[in-house]
Length: 124
Image 1 (cartoon, one colour):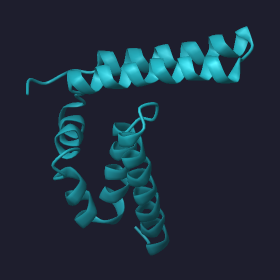
Image 2 (cartoon, helix red, strand yellow; image 1 turned 45 degrees about the vertical axis):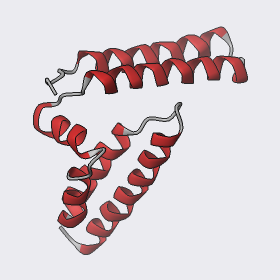
Image 3 (cartoon, one colour; image 1 turned 120 degrees about the vertical axis):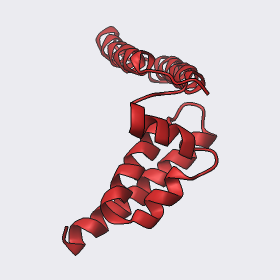
């Protein structure tokens, strides 16, 4: 891979790490998906930071489960679904969308929740 692509993936990886850490602090923003993308970016740009992320004491085990088994821990599933529900309620309350837009967003969140809930969960 050439230097420009590696640099792009490296910068994108750090952007995803930043979004993931922000998501860890804000209940309406996801964390894991950004860190999965960051690990993928680092696998193409920086083995050192890929290893750091996969060995992270808080986020590493979830990322390794995803990478090796496509698995999402049950606790993370419920947190993700709760965050989506809270995000949808917040959207409906503050944005006051049309019924059509509200329905489209609801279908999107339901599809995302269904995907998360249908991933395997490994025993801890």
